[in-house]
Image 1 (cartoon, rainbow, N blue to C red):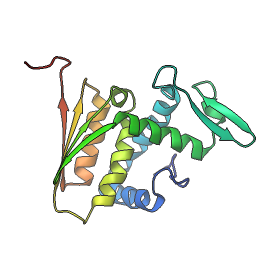
Image 2: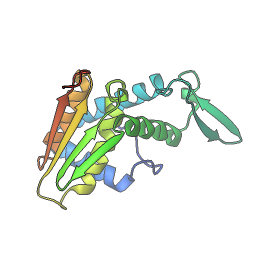
Image 3: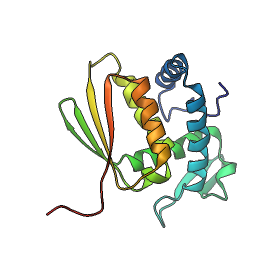
Image 4: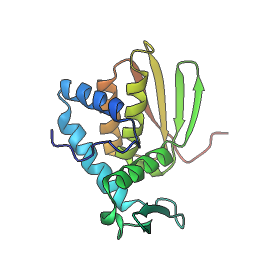
Length: 175
């Protein structure tokens, strides 16, 4: 597998991510993992200003850089990992936990950055592995994104003890 993200800058735990990659490669899913990396990098560049008017800044040596699609290519690997993680966290913004049931209410960012969100969830699942026999994740989204389905399918296969369901919610509230 040709790695494009090494997770060596502490944005996600390197040892945890190495274990997750090894697990995925043993399952024969390195092609999906490569695609997720490529897409996460593209998502990070395209959507680094995911919240209109709210900019990320990085201290790049002596220079403070506003992260935009135009400045993205100036970022070092650690800064890029930071943007990917930020977007993943924005997408998986709100959690409700009840025992072994976790409901994640997503923001619209998950539809633009499904790979970024999948890496966040992948680290969590790898950390949970062996600590529980089963866990139920409900990922509530406000629209369709085919690649989000691919990512969640990959995570379901990689972590079979985690029951992961993507629930499409309409914008209408029930009365």
